[in-house]
Amino acid sequence: MNTAQIIALVVLLVVIVAAVVVFAVSRRRPAVETPAVPAVEAPWAAPAEAPAEVPVVEEVQAVAAVAEAPEAPASRMVRLRRRLAGSQNGLARALAGLLSSDRLDADVWDDFETTLIAADLGVGPTTELVEALRTTLGVEGIADPVAAKEVLRRELVALVDPGLDRSLRLEHESGTPAVVMMVGVNGTGKTTTVGKLARLLVAEDHRVLLGAADTFRAAAVEQLTTWGERVGVPTVGGAEGADPASVAYQAVERAIGDGMDVVLVDTAGRLHTKVGLMDELGKIRRVVEKQAPVTEVLLVIDATTGQNGLAQARVFADAVDVTGLVLTKLDGSAKGGIVVAVQRELGVPVKLVGLGEGADDLAPFDAEQFVAGLLGE
Image (cartoon, rainbow, N blue to C red; front, side):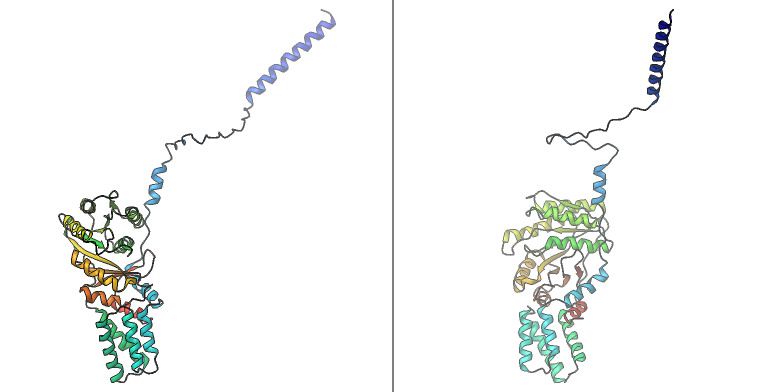
């Protein structure tokens, strides 16, 4: 073998060895991953399913089920009293004007009487109050503003009648709930009041169920269900146009099965002039009482309607035996006297009062607190 052949053989061996070494090193080195390009999903493509280990539905339900903590009943009327004191209530203005007068002559008393009647106190109660005040402040010669205010407070409280039983009738036998029907005309805030009352009862540790028997208004069931979710209570509703009495019956049936304390039945708002709709309230009550007694029928009245609210109240009372009144929107009304007038008209007490749009702006009515608010305290 000549020199050229030897050199060629050595070169070939070197090339072979180099190739083997490169191959061995490449086997030990991790592969370089090419960055993945996100796929562009076609707009018509079905969405990808969530991985089995991510419980999307359960998470959403858990969030929806978190209930708000309602305000304790004891602090509500104190807060609402402050709001009433700062309102533009006509009755409050009349009282303030009387107390600020330098002397109580005939003109002052005439203006005072006119303002009270305009505030829907009613002719009878107005006459009683004016005569009592004129006797006490005039004949007895009380000129001290502080003493005059105390006299005014006493006479007003007597007019509002603190002796009326304003407690909600929620007593019930074991195995059956107390049933509260809410009635009223359209636009009084009835469904909202049902939700607020549920919050109030939950704050008092009652187990509550809502019956959405307003099947005529498309959004009523959804609205009440939302209130139930906020406070953590179940809602039984029906399809739009369903028989309201049937929905109320099913709500009470569910409450019995679940061991609830109270069922709040929301009924459809109706004009007091519609005889057929008024008769339907009686049907709802009769059907419900096949399972449990209706312990309360609360009539919701918009305080801003004044004398028209009294006309509504008379018809509802005749149709369904109203046991208590709920006055809404009292803070935005010049008709504060309706508290006295409607009680005199129906012979039933105002049990709850609403003074605002907040979820906890509903409180048990208290004569002393109401008068304190009117006097600006």
